[in-house]
Length: 557
Image (cartoon, rainbow, N blue to C red):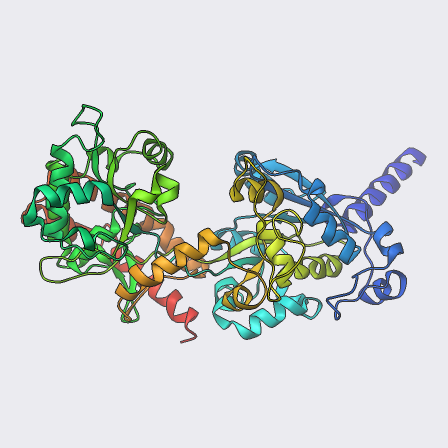
């Protein structure tokens, strides 16, 4: 009996310990009033420490996070040390590679023992609904009073609030990353080899442009581009004695940037790799546009004639970039910037979108959001979670956001501000801006919008150049009635419907379009493709209905 009593007592003690701690460890929590009284906890003045020195010693949080291979351990990053000094909050980071996180994600979400939060969580709406229903995720929206920066963002930006609010219960379970530069919506620019072009027009006056016109902002018709590409294909443009190693026009098929979609703009179609946009307020699949077959057949003709190499449909992004950095081979290509693709960017000009035979001239509209909604999650049961929420709320301070995104002052930014703004520092010799950033910046939770670029931090020169070019040569060619699809939140029922149909729809579209681009497409083949796509078996109508309902909620309808 005595042994039985002792066993029961030990078992009860273990249960009490597990029930009273966050993540299954042996820490104990405090009420907010106790945190204030014992540890000086405060959240209202964002310029002062969150805890006093005693609190810094008594309270520790454990954060699990992936990081890129180039980055320092987050515990060793200067920007993290700066945040620790400013907040007096002690955070221990457990870093794993992005590959390991991908393998462990579901395990950690299911059993988060010893973990208070996951940074770089990459949570999809379906995952948030799943784990929120299991009571594993903390409803952040119940604690907004302790997060003055985030609360202000939600009040000022109802569109961001819509993108992070769970459609099933109206609560928020993740903190977003917001980096709005006006870049992602238009991921393609058309670059043309000026040296090759001048040679072509000198030898073929029927191209119809002069050498003086070969500058940034050149506007070409489809017919003019076709003549240029034909010349590039038929001649030894790089002078290596081989007329077969030039690539007249290049892209990475279905890539997030530098893809084929702007070619459809010659036919007035605002395409993207999802083949889905908002047009006149309605969710629309671009492949159902009556002009899509004609555009696909036209692009196939360029592929069939070698003006676009077939390898573009199969090559990966890394190979595409590596090929361009070798000997001079690219006549024209799509990307954000020439310097990333070719080693002689000064020889390339940036063109306006190609103009079709009927005068159509537009560009793709990407659905890649500038708000990453599922960046950071917190687990229920985390002791002193109010302190941790206030700590991460500081990440939305503009100056801290800039350092989280690019690196610390003194390393990524100059010590002295210019015109009241943080200004990028020249990287050390032998390093690039990307080297410095990937090594010293954790990325993740931040808030950088147009206001911050205007008043707090100078946009890095490379990004500013992209933006300037997009504002001149892409954005003016997007119709006002066409919008990208933002982050949308779905109900459980809607997610079930998407899981039933969407993967098959995407596969069906991708498989057929690849075949049509490679082999051509007859009217009968196209009619069969679109008829089957809209059949009840494939379920396109059901998917459109789900997206439309979610989009209407996003708009507050």
